Image (cartoon, rainbow, N blue to C red; front, side, top):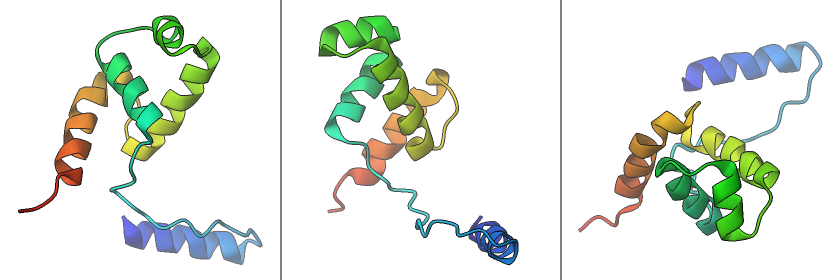
Length: 95
């Protein structure tokens, strides 16, 4: 994947674009609020139900979910369970 990212970056620069320097970080962590929203969404709550619990609008919940999907490299709520388990496993300290 890194080779594709480097090639795409080179093509963008050649076309005159100024792509962001964002390192590829598979361990990018969710904020505590994002973790809470992700767990509630994983458990089947709707944006409206999550928003009511956290005193946020459903639109704000939608925005957070979209941002989290990018961090977790998933595209739907149905993949949250596996993605959260993977993230928790990766974040666990090694002994």
